[in-house]
Length: 74
Image (cartoon, rainbow, N blue to C red; front, side, top):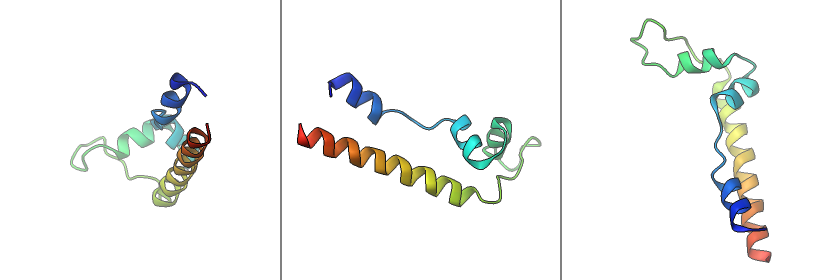
């Protein structure tokens, strides 16, 4: 693995689109749920948002752990 590949993997961030797909909602729904609740365009987040984000965080953590192990092996 080279430096560019390793840093690309480490800095690959989740997007609103990634979260929307995982939650089964539109990107606009995610963006509106991030607004201040006093904003008239605010919408409640998906009901299962905590489990969706926990799953995404776990998956990302596992990817980073594998990256760390691969770099340490090399």
